[in-house]
Structures are given as C-alpha cells and as structure tokens.
Length: 76
Image (cartoon, rainbow, N blue to C red; front, side, top):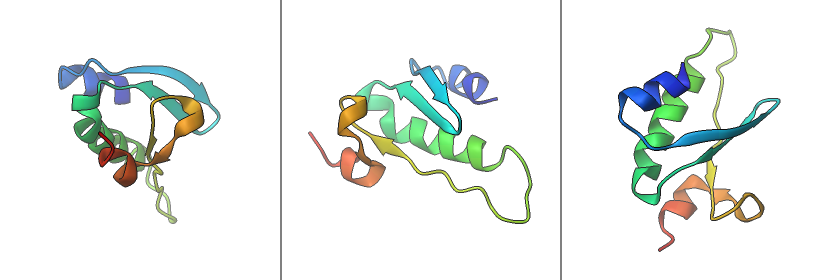
C-alpha cells in the first residue's frame, strides 16, 4: 500500500485526505520529488486494467495553489 511504501522509505509525508480518486498529502519540500515518484509508481500499479491508470500529480503551498508537479518543483 502507499502509506506502507512511504513509511518504508522513511518519509515524513502524511496523507491528509482522500476524496473519491484524489489524495491530498502534506509533503516536506525536500521529499517532494521522491514522494511524487513513489505515489505515481504505487498508484499506477495498484490494479491491472486494459486502459492504463494515469496519475496526475500537482503540488503547491496549499490546496488552492496547486500547479502541475513539474512547475511546482521549479518554485523556490
């Protein structure tokens, strides 16, 4: 499971909320890249379907200021 994978990595990231197919995490800035990779890997491989599962990752200082992950990684 995802929380088990994060714990195994020693991550301080915590899942705060799940709404349908959306998950909201609190992630230390220095862990963002590694956590994003883990979340994508675990969630896209959770079940085998004919159509692939695709994870859309976004990050921001708060829920109202989310940007695509690649853009958020470039913020200082």
